[in-house]
Image 1: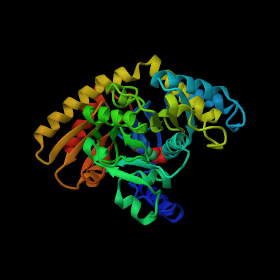
Image 2: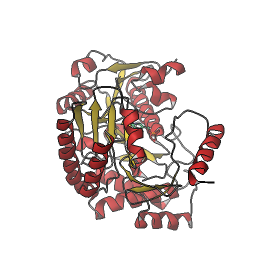
Image 3: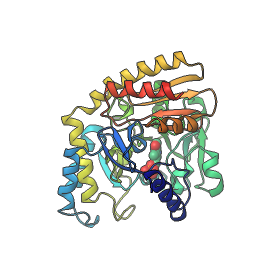
Length: 398
Ligand SMILES: *Cc1c(COP(=O)(O)O)cnc(C)c1O
């Protein structure tokens, strides 16, 4: 039997076993090295998806892998009833690069959002002595699939089958300060937004908007929650995207590239938000265990020693130039947006999934965001030569 028949059979089997909430591409990846992936048939792919903006250091980085192996041989899990050194080390590094005051480790992005929402509610409860508070979120946002995170995700299609969701969520227009202002009342406790909208189509917040929302939050004693799960961890060309805006959030969420592939997220809080919740208010069995924290600690260490953020800025600029040229050459591409290594091309029609599929056949992994936009979120360690090769494949496929 050929390798191709093997793949076909395995996929058929998968469809009988796995709960079907995804339409997957017909590829089974086996291993990776650097910015390349290899499928079970031995075919090599250039990766511009990084497992949805997760594998910032690429695949099989020797130093990172050694750190996992070392921790696996010592202690995987101990629960949050006890202290563990990797959590303290990773936490210390995360606070240092974010200038936030406290961190809570979670298992995923959506759980980080749940924690952030709970801080907002707890903060307002402490402030007012009662519950029933409201949160302002953005249209076209994405914050995750658990019910709290889904409640602040501005996407009717994702929300509708699961209503009723959290009460008291109001949706404003992203980058429209007046639309935020109009939703504020005495019960509003927070504004939540992505600094750069990811799934919604790679829309960076304007400086005027983010500064304006910060001022509104200060004026009304509300918390500003910035979701940096996709755009954070160096991807924007800053360690966290908000750092280029001259504002600071009260609460920030991270995940995706924090663990480079092991499931870890975090919510971080500063100032008064950092003490809003008290013992008993929140918990997790796995969150912040020694294994995933050893991974995050090593990731953060490598960010320093290899100057990953400076690299992103440099290669991101190169990607920007190349994609601008590409946009100018092709009438079907109507917009080019983003920062650093989170960029998107918008087509004049809903062809993004078809483009992704065609690119995959040409051994390039590139994912879509919505139906009109293809999204460039490669490993942060890609080089200019990788960009050139990607553009070549893109030209060929189009
Ligand atoms: C991916 C993502 C999430 C959800 O993270 P999960 O780990 O999938 O739960 C939340 N917010 C943003 C901006 C994301 O990109």
